Every structure is written in C-alpha cells, then in structure tokens.
Image (cartoon, rainbow, N blue to C red):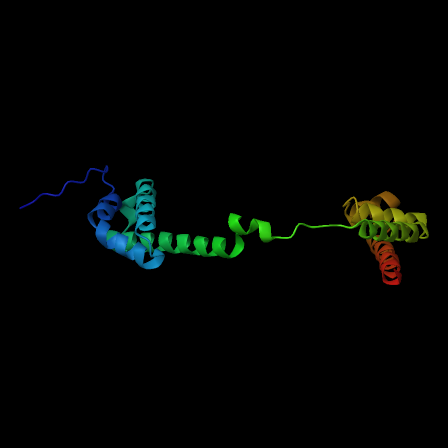
Length: 172
C-alpha cells in the first residue's frame, strides 16, 4: 500500500491541486483555449492556495476545480476586454491626429469671451456664486454661509448664471 505524503504544511488544497494537475489544466484550457495560459492559471491557483487556510474547505477537489475555473474565466474576461479596448501598435498610424485650425481657435476664443461678458452682465453676487461653485468647486452651502443668504437663493443664482451662459451659446 502506497502512503501519500503531504509536503505543504498540512495544506490539503495545495496537495489536491498538485495531485489533480492534469484535470485542472484541462478545465483551464477549456476556458482559455491555450495550454501555456492554462499552466499560468494553474500556478496562480497553487500560489493562492498557499496563502489560504485549507482546514475550512469541505471538498478540496471541488474547491480546486472551481478555483481554477474562476481564475481562467477572469483571465478570459480580461483578454476579451483588452481585445475590445486596446488598439494594436500596428494600427497607430491609421488613427488621425487631432488638428485644430486657427479659425477653430479663434471661434472658440470669441465664444468664451461672449460667455464671460454675459456673466459680467449679471449682478456681482450672482456672478461670484456661479464662478465659485461651477469653476472653483465650492459647495453651495459654503457659498450661502459666506454671503449670509439661504442655500435656495444660492441655487437660484447659480441657475441664473447657467442660463446666461446657455443663452450666449445658443446665440453664437
């Protein structure tokens, strides 16, 4: 009768992973369709098992199978995401460079000046509330405390500033 030796400090999960390596590689390969990546997933599973306490695992073989399957599935999802969202280096020359003409810059600058002038036509307190909230990012409650007015009034002042900007942009 052959006696099995556990060399991994009582970590039955690591022992099961090594004992069932061919079966676990087939599970990973079924998801990834790559023998080399399946080996990587298997090694990741062994490393993960080394850091775990295996005493609470009731069915180590099932747990090992599920662990390898989940790691392979995560890798497949990662590959799919990268394939959809990453542009290969070979295709970089086909991406057009952004070009801004002098006319576009001039039109944008004139529009910005018109928006700033529309804000200058507002009451000083409304203009300050709008700029401090929308540009400086100061919360409305802080602006209300500093001006000594209600939060509702600050909200209306910001709304009035926003409408003035929108009217200017529609006219442009």
